[in-house]
Length: 134
Image 1 (cartoon, rainbow, N blue to C red):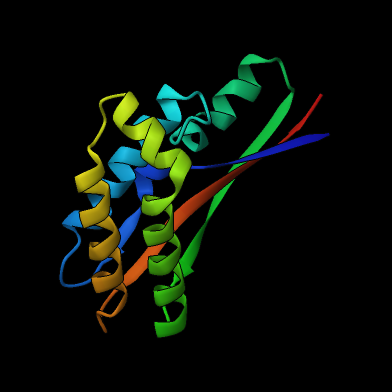
Image 2: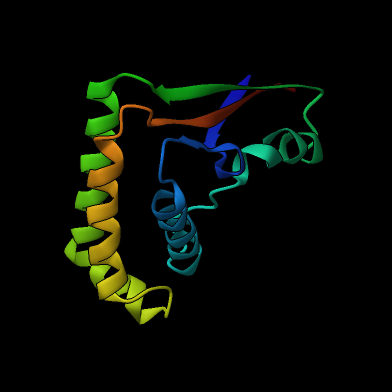
């Protein structure tokens, strides 16, 4: 038996008054991950097929959501994402690949902090898993 797990950005849920900035951040992050070959942000949807193609006799796939649905969790997520926008490595890589400017990253950091203070803000993303047997 073998197992694997991956994020699936195609199912991200962002709620709140102003979601355009957080959505743009995830667009930037996905493009950066692909450009830097960090990860494929939509790999979760492919896990079952990959294991089927690899010849496993039995393959089971499933997904769960990781949710940020309390004021403390929302604010923690917002602060983490704002910090990511200010991360020195991200601030080098993103403009180098022509994905976004430093000015936009600064604006997104502020947008995350504003989003985190929104009483209606909510965030969730799917985490896909697969188990396979020979």
